[in-house]
Image (cartoon, rainbow, N blue to C red; front, side, top):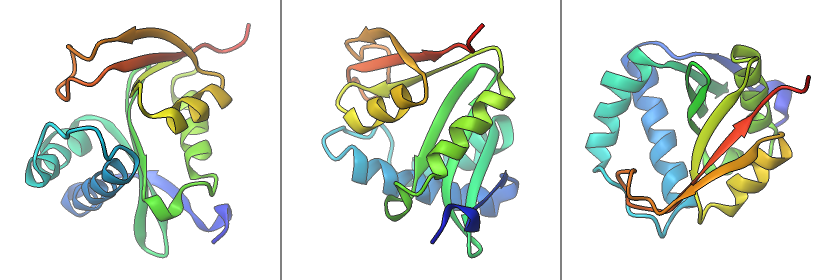
Length: 154
């Protein structure tokens, strides 16, 4: 599958929320097998249905009618960016980051866990720089994390 066969669009409604939650669950479990999830599968599904999709600017990557990736934005912040494991490395994440930069041209921040080295490399490749490391006491997983920032070039 080529990058051109994937479309990005705004998420809407409970069907998208369900699909987004499934992508999140599969991606999280594949990428972060050593990080304890703070919520059950059903809790994650409810969070996406009642909070993320209706309250955040949520985007989906769709291929062949199936949701294969998701990104949730708040002003100046990438809150979530997850891809179905079999769709990583195909440019979808690159397109999501470009979209996030277009939506927040003044700059962005995001958090990722310290153990997620592939995410660090991905965001650094896109011009994000490490701004802060924490011991994880402020996140629900209690997992050490890193805050990354991106600022447009002057």
